[in-house]
Amino acid sequence: MSPARNKVTLANLSEFARLMPHGIPRDQVLEALGGLSLECSLGYDLSKTFLADGWIVEYRHLRTAAQMNPVNDLLLFATSGGIKLDMADGSQQHVKSGDQVLLSADSPVTVFPVSGYGEVSFIALSVELDLAQVFHELTDVGPVQPPYYWGYDKRYAQTYAEGGTTWETQEPNEIVVKMVPELITDKANDEILDLGCGEGRDTLWLTAQGFNVTGVDVSAAALDRARELAGLYNLSANFLERDVVFLRGLKNNSFAVALNMGCLHMMDSAEHRARHLARTFELLKPGATFIINHCKKDWGKGFWSVDDFQTIETAKFGDEIQRKIRLPDGSTKQVMMEVLHNKVMSEDGLRAELHSAGFVDIEVLEEDKFTFGNAAIMICRRPL
Image 1 (cartoon, rainbow, N blue to C red):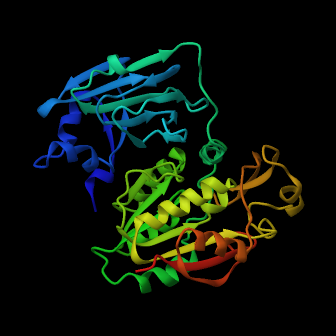
Image 2: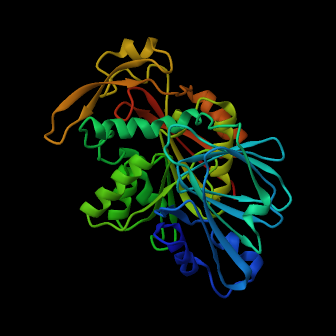
C-alpha cells in the first residue's frame, strides 16, 4: 500500500520537504506525488518555502476568484474548502479539500472558491515558479456554488450533528462479503477500490480480512467517521477524500476489483456518470472486475431510513422530508433532511452505460432489497 495515499497534516510548510520523493528524475516528481492528500493548519495567510533541486512550495488562502497561467507544471493541493477550476480547454473541474489537480505549463486557468465549505486554501508546488507572478486575483468575482453531489458531505455532517452514530449500517454489503474473497487471489498485491465508501462499511470489513483496499469518498465528514471507526477497531485502513467524478491521484491499471455500492446512484448528470465510469475503467487492470449496486425505480420503498415511501417518491431535489437516523443507544430519531440529487436506472439503461464505458461481460447478479428498497447488483469486467 502506497504511503503517499495517506492523508498528511502539515503544521509548517517546511515539513513538505519530507514528502518529496528522492532518487527519481525531476520531471517525474509531480507524478510521484499524485496520491498525496493534504490538509494544512497554518495560521498565516501566505507562506513560501524553497526546497531542494529548485522546487518551491507556496501556501495561500483563496477569497476571490483568480487567474493563473503557470509557466511550469504546477501541482495544486486543496487544503481546506473547495475550488472550482475553469480550464483552458473550456472544461470545468472541482477540487475538494484533500484533493489535488495538475495544472500544465502555459495553460491558463481561472480558480474560484466554492461557497459553503468554510475557508478555502491551497498549496502549490512547482519548479522555480514564483506564484505571485502567475496568480492574479479578480476582486470583483466571489465564491461559486458547489457541484450538487458534494451535498452528500452535508448529509453525513447533519447526521452526526443530530446525534447519529453513522448514516449507514456498519455491516458490509452482502455482495462484497460473498464475491470479493472469490475474486482476489493475491491479498498482498491485488488492490481493491471502494468508490463512494462513505463511513467505510465495506472498506473496514475488507481491511479486517487482510485485503488491500482504498476507500474513496467526496465527504470529509464521512471519512472522518470512517477513520474514527478504523481506530476503534485497530485497523490500518486507507481512506482518500476525492471528487468521485474525477478520482484524481490514483494510478491507472492498478486495481483488481472496484466496488460501487450506490455511488453512481448519487450522480444524475449524464456527463458526470460517463466520466466516473470512464475513470473507473482506467483505474482497473485489464481483466479486473467492477461490481455495481444501483437503485432502480421505487428504490425508496422499503428503504430503512424512509418510513413513508410516498414522501421521497413525490419530493423534488432540495425539498426536506423526514428521514430516520441511528442513535448510539440503538434507537432511531426522525430528522428533516434535504432530498439530494440521485438517479434511478433500469438494468438495461445501466448496462448501456457500462457498455459505452468499455466494460464487457455485463451481468445482472441479483436484486438488492436491503441496501436500498429496490436496486440491481451488476458485475462486469475491463477486457484483457
